[in-house]
Amino acid sequence: MADPVANLKDAEARLKAAAADHGRAPPDVLVVTKTVAPERILPLLEAGHRRFGENRVQEAVAKWPPLKARFPDVELHLIGPLQTNKARDAVAMFEVIQTLDRDKLARVLAEESALQRRSPRLYLQVNTGDEPQKAGAAPQSADVLLANSLRLGLAIEGLMCIPPADEPPAPHFALLAKIGRRNGLSRLSMGMSGDYLIAASLGATLVRIGSGIFGDRPA
Image (cartoon, rainbow, N blue to C red):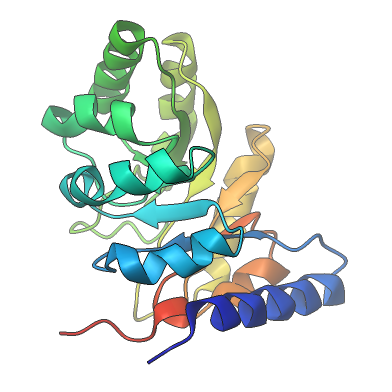
């Protein structure tokens, strides 16, 4: 069985080297815990890691409250698509929501943040490949979505993307960085277990690693 703590240290060392080769600071690691049982997450928490990502609101609500009670400084990120009917639970559970991708969701998140007096930091998800089956704002719509979200008082921290699985990721990472620069957003969540070193070389500030930490998930 994979050793999550050792794998995380290895990934951090690789990221440090890749970023240094391009004169950049290494990105932070978001450990993705989708389908991972709490007992496998616990060693990472005990080793001091605090930044984790979940794909589904329901899974996070079921799994994370006891862990957050023990480790209250955990920073939990939502990295999967968010339906508006799950916004209430998402605002309550997550410190960061990376998948804001449409105006309706922005309005609902603003309403929930006001009701709960809790404001998760937000990333706009950009569908850099314009894939119809994938969540995310079209690249040409990202600027307008950002402006609309800021008018609602939302705390937009950065941008996130998931490149098409069958295309080289580098052009998509470069496009996300370009959209970030023109909008003054320096935080970029890009790169996963298979391409996080490429993302680090192109300016990622946060990479999302799941199978690279825990091993392949069961089918």
